[in-house]
Length: 152
Image (cartoon, rainbow, N blue to C red; front, side, top):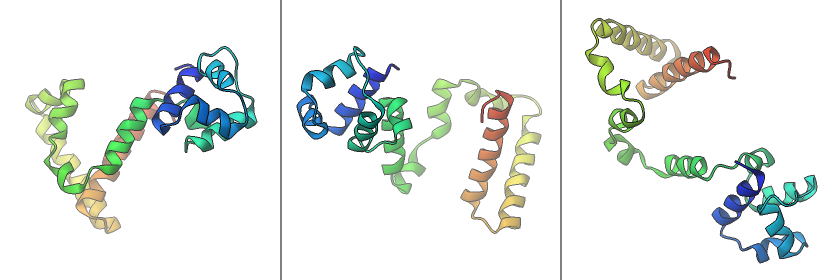
C-alpha cells in the first residue's frame, strides 16, 4: 500500500476530515489532500504528528492496512463466550483447504497424539492453563514456520 493510501485510510478510520487534520497540524486542507494522493510527502515531524493524531505508531502509519487493523480490533473485542462458538477450523479452511482434510490422511492421528502430549507437558512443566499451553505450542509451530520462510 502506498503512503498516501495509508494516510487516507488511517484518517478515515479515525473519523476525521481533511479540514480537521489540517487544522490540527497547522497546514492547509490541500496539503493533506496532496499527501493522500502521493503528490507530496509529509516531513518526518508531520508524519509523527499524523501518527499520534490517528493513534498509531509511525511504523503502523507507514504500513497501515485497514483490513489488518479491523481484524485486530475485532479479535480484541470478541468476548470469550462468542469466541468459543466460532468453528475456527471451518473458518480457516475456507482460506486453507488442507485444514478441512488433513485429519483423514493416514498416519496423521499419531502426530495429533504427539502434539497433545507436548501440550500436556508444557502445561504441567510451566503450570499453565490448558488454553495457555495450547497457545504456546501453537506459537512455537508458527515461529518454526516463519523461520523456514526466512522471516523474523
